[in-house]
Each structure stands twice: as structure tokens, then as C-alpha cells.
Length: 172
Image 1: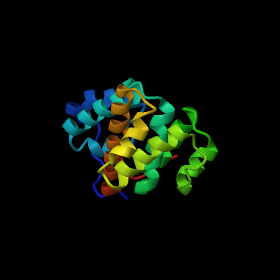
Image 2: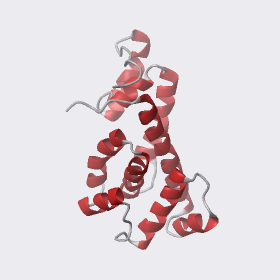
Image 3: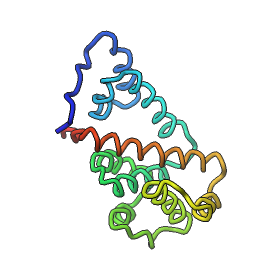
Image 4: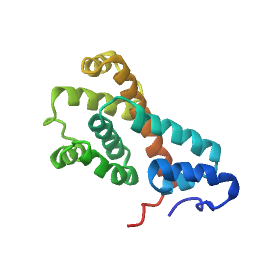
């Protein structure tokens, strides 16, 4: 059960933001419902994660691979369940998802393993040794490398917020 009650989304002052969230996300997920306690934070969050998920050039497969990995490492079940169908649509296989959950990255291609090692290091240790960064950077142009690091950093924020606030899973 969430640690704070979800606010009323029918308040006239937040209606434009609620409408924007629905337009961009299809509905107001519990994550955004909780964020609506602070509309300014909810709006910034929406802008950041719209850029990461819908405007960046990083492949959807890589994006969802690291998001699912972060969810596994951080024990963020809500995040995992929300991104599992997206990851599968973006090209991850069921076997790859299971490997992420088992902490067995041996079946991934070298580029994926380098990217996942960067993800694991950023998530677990924060500080990234040059060799780990360089190994991932060898597989991506600079723009996508920035987007990858922003995705990893951003979704660590998401999982930490979800877990600290004990956001409820979506119904259905």
C-alpha cells in the first residue's frame, strides 16, 4: 500500500497536466498519481521521461534492456512489470528477460554485455571505472552514449521513488 494517499486528480488547477499525462501515457499510472502531490515535479518528470523514452535516438531494445535490469537489481517490481511488455515489443526475447532476472549475462552479445556491465556498475556502485565506460562506449555513438547514461540514471531515480513511496501496482 502506498505510503501517502493518492491525490484527487480532478482539481481544476492540475487538469491541464493530468490531460497531458493522459495524452502522452494513455492514462495516469499510479506513479504519476503519486507525483501529482507536486505538480511541478510531475511536470518535470513527464518532460524528462518523455525525452528519454520517446524522443531519444537510443534503440528501444537497449533502453528497455537496461530499464528491466535496473528494476531487477533494485527489486522494483512495479517498474519491471510496467516495462516487461514494452521490452518484449522492442525486441527483447523471453530468454533474455529471464537471463536479466537470473543475473546471467553470458548469452548476450558482447555489445549488450558491455552496456549491461555499465548499467550494473552505475546502479550498484555509482562510480564507473574508465574501462567499463570505454567498453560500452565502443558500441555506441556519443549521442547514444549520453542517452544511455541518462536512461540508466533516470530509471534508477524511478525505481528508488517507486520503492520509497511503495507505489501500488496497477489494477488489472
